[in-house]
Amino acid sequence: MGRWLSFRVFYAANLLCGLLFTYPTIAEPLQFALLAKRVDQRFFIQAGEGCAEAARTQGDVCRLLGASGPAHFRKQNQLLEQLFHQHLDGIALSVTQSEWLAGHALKQMSHIPLITFNADLNPTEQHLRRSHVGFDNLAIGKQLGILAQRLKPQGGRLCVLTGSLKDTYQQERLHEIRRQLGAIPNHKGTERLRGENGWIEPSRCPLERAETSEHALLQLATLLNTNQFDVIVNIGSWPIDQPAMYRQQLGPILTELDRQGTRPVIIIATPGPDAEQRALLDDGLVQAYLGWNSYELGHQSYWILKRLAQGQAVPEKVLIDTFNVYLPQASSNSPVKP
Image (tube, rainbow, N blue to C red; front, top):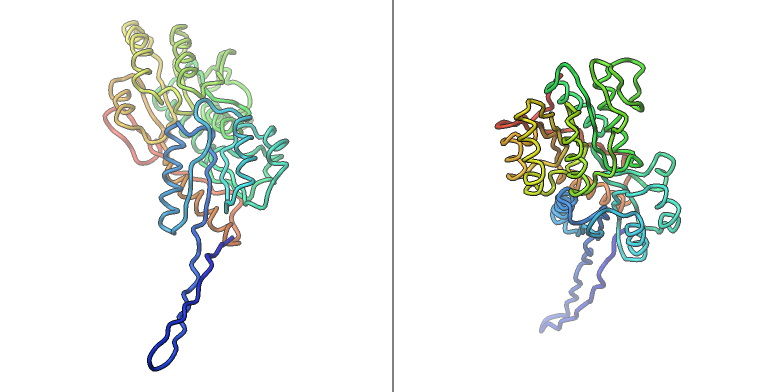
């Protein structure tokens, strides 16, 4: 929805004749908001920068909003209610708890166009948003499974670390890891692997609540100390969000496991790793990263919001399906093939 600045008409006298000068209408910048799960996490910071950058090229504004600290659906619900009463041209929401938001803030839906990004609403609640911009989570899960197969061809004992499996995107990644490793027609990915192609998931796995560095590192340390796993896959970047802490807490454990010849393969899904995170890889503290472009997520979110604000049709979903695989001392710009 465009808003227009009022204009003034100035009259100027001329010795020969009177001239009427009318200044053209000037469009105000469109105002968009990215409501993240948290604003102090590198993933969302990069997405916010991508949205802001795309908006600047069009003379618009896109701001990253949200609470700091661990994601909490009540905090997000409160912020969403506040945004519904502001003069915004569109909101992109990374969903914390779909059912709760649908039963509270989203019941007060305003005229402001709403899309989701990164984390979508549950299928039964997706009618409440206009579009979704995210990553192809089935492709992410598949590529994580391919990496596990490449680094442990004979299979082994697997544990997957997730955030909340109430999030659809985390379910999709987990299910596709299992489908890739199970590779049998009837395996839907909803059940643990029990020996398919040599892969086994013990009953304690997958482990949830890994959505902060502290929880993720505690869970990883616990798994490593049991010395019972061959491959550990993190479907989010949480363990390496604080690389120095990762090195400090897990380095000694991994060194001892290496001495015993029982160090597991660790694979982490993450936005493009920075220098400190690459150092973890090159020093053998992580065996592989599967990276994606968070900036592009922000870019695409802006363009969908822009189209909605202009009254244009938008696709129901926009999925980003390009990823980078990072291995020690080398990186690949395309997914690793099985």
